[in-house]
Length: 581
Figure 1 (cartoon, helix red, strand yellow):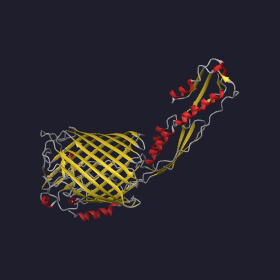
Figure 2: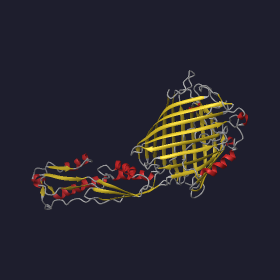
Figure 3: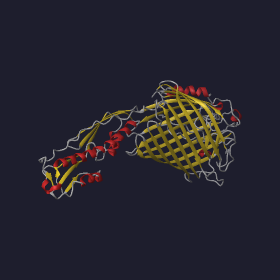
Figure 4: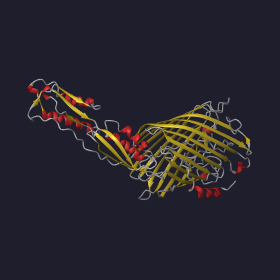
């Protein structure tokens, strides 16, 4: 087995020439169930992406988050000339017929009601009042965002009949002209705009669609202009687009893995966006420690114009216990995971998103003793094998403005008896129900100061296999403790962090924090202690756009046994992320 330092050096050397990998939020943890005191569970709570008010750029995104598109340049609304009538001549109006309108019907009826049913000369309506009515209806359309719609009084109509016809021309797009795309197919853009440009053309809906295009990671720049078309009410939307770089790659060095398999890890990631021109993405990553090798492959493709996506992902890892007291026992594990998922936003705006997701996960793990002897270290697995087939239904919600972000995620997981899932009489097998709930609140206290509060919860009435348990301890949950310090069926985790600028450009921040969490089991014994809490200080530094460094120091407030002497076990966590592409 190579030493950790040798592996990391090799990883750094090859990281920048690997062209088929992608960044990922969090590597899966090693999947094994070693003896008591050595916990390498599968799950730590997945982070909700920090879509926070940004006084400075988010560390190393694949592209800068662009500003919203400028106001549309729009054409003026030309209407045909109204019929000429002597200015002082009144008209006995019996009925006003409005033709061609499909929206604002009730509002228009209220406007015309007071002009109707006039049958006497004394209540005749001056013609200039009808012209004003036409202008009022046009303004009503404009005030409601229908900026290319308008009303006019039809020419050559017999006004003496008392029936006045007002024609509405509701604006619509004649065509969309798209320039600047190289690899991305024009239909990707056109189909998303068609949803927002159904007649009558509404400026608010169109600008919202353009804002979403501006935020699309496939596009770097979006400029739009609305110009007159071939006739009144017809318009042409002209777009000048610039594609974002398709290839993204980088490396991460941190000490965020469990000390049982080597806390120091190196990760190579990269992605290739828009592989086939449909807005799809091919991804992969590779990570290693002294006792862990893990890789993952993923492919995602949009399936409709409302940003519904289908994804498939495979991951594989092998791990081995390297801690001195257990190294001679040859404890290791092999794990694989295959996932098929579909995610569909129901509401998607620049400041709001509501989405649903459905996934099928097939997860397999086996643990060994003396390197090659299958062995179960806990109740539930059979001959060291844990097999889970789960259907997961998720709901996501996001609301943000310039000063605040609220984000929530809920997931219901159902373990089913399919694809050879582990089924036994112990009550700890592949049949289960789990609810995972996550909430994040971000508030801007001053232009460069943020407070971030998070809650993560996993609740289940069942005893779970190691593949589905949740862990506490480490940089992602409770700082001040080793990764996966506590492992159980249920957990509640909370965190509060303050981000304070040190430099005027906000590239250097200090982050005082407080983390706390508690766990419990349903059928197995509870760990002692069940609750851990940490208080500490972090430092974040982004000296350049492609480089981000982070250092956290956590002080454990509740004592635990068997703390080692690694940096992580002494409450120190570091991370270096370099993303040149």
